[in-house]
Image 1 (cartoon, helix red, strand yellow):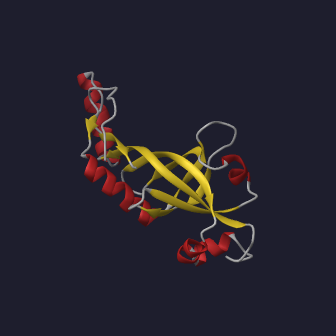
Image 2 (cartoon, helix red, strand yellow):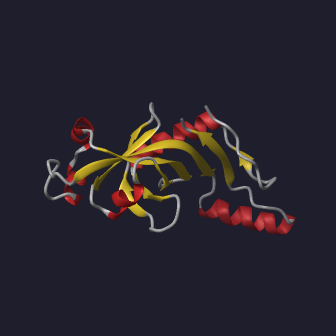
Length: 174
């Protein structure tokens, strides 16, 4: 289910929510890297590799159970994952973060990339997964490369309006 957010600026274009949600999951499955952290102060966000399960609206991350992030979250703590693809999509996903020691998922998502960060291997007793149960996301999709960006800014200044650089929408992910 998806819902529109309040539009603060008349110049912001609403995105098609179905397309935005599909693009978000597709981009995250392809790129995987974003910044994860608690929604309520106390710690900086940190780069993490995301493993997406779009059917359930969940994202999994490998972590040590004794890491600062794992210690802060508790079960169901509010968290955010900030993501940007290589092209034109930006997103901030909100949800609840919980430890999840599901060995079958660890096996499914284990890869040489993950192994590089966890030298003791997937059988390290300190290794766990963190599960983000996604509630909603704010998504922006731009249509501006560098030339288009400069043109839109110049045009907006000449017309005394905001540049048309794309659109945004809020998605309900659960």
